[in-house]
Image (tube, rainbow, N blue to C red):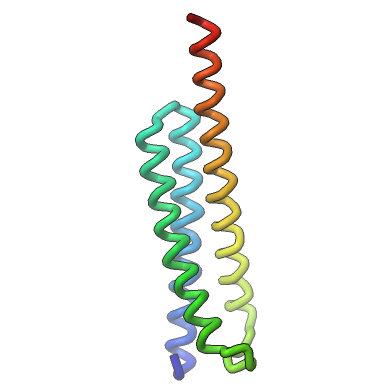
Amino acid sequence: MDAPQDMETTVMELIIHAGEARSAAMQALQAARKHSWEEADASLLEATKAVREAHRIQTELIGADEGCGKIPVNLILVHAQDHLMNAMLCRELVEEIIYLHREVQELTKTRTQ
């Protein structure tokens, strides 16, 4: 990751994977609203995989920096970090909301029986 072009490509990959994670998490939430649990679980798994890949890239960048400022901090890198943080938070919150949707559905079933 010596050349600026390599750095730009790496940062763009981070943004892409973070965006995929957020989109998949939101798809999981939409599926849960329809009580499509298999689809929700599959989308949440897709979000988890995308977050892991984005986090792997972030870890690679941190390792390359070695805590010494070797990686120049620019607006696109900050933007990428922001995307990753939002994607991770979104996935975690969606997981909790899906759990609540399931719990409400179970309570509703119990009350109508």
